[in-house]
Length: 250
Image (cartoon, rainbow, N blue to C red):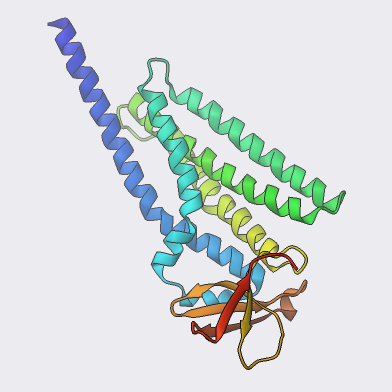
């Protein structure tokens, strides 16, 4: 009877953990919109075209946030598997969170050094974007730790749980979208490093336009410049007269 009771309790505990994890996953999917919105607003603010934000649909925001949400989802899934192990604890997830966050901060320091001391702007952009992704991944461990702490406290919320939510918000909603969106814009709009596709429009001069993205049934184009105030933007309908030529550096 003891073994049977123990098995029932284990299954019950497992089901409760899965239920908590499922509710968290649903919550993560709902904030995908917010993450994408934050990435876009940081990108467009750096680009100097915040007016485009009002033209984007909710689906585009969700799609834009998929990298951050994927990073969070992978580490969160790893956290749940960790909690199912005999030695899996919330404290160990906290340690993984701290280590990943520390690596992200070190990468930001490396990005600063490469830019300011070695003038390697391209590497600065890459390191900063990757650092933002690691911040999002660390946030997945934070949510895993939250699930573990709730299990330990029999679902009773305390001050530490709120701190975990605050840390998740700062990492996943504030910092990760900022570093990803801002540095992606810097990389895309840098005349010397941009990989944005070149666009030609029949019947117009050879002024080089670059394709930033599609907005509904139109292309959002930009004329590159080091200075935000000197960049030109325009919207053109998608048509055979607008030709996307390449995405290679000149």
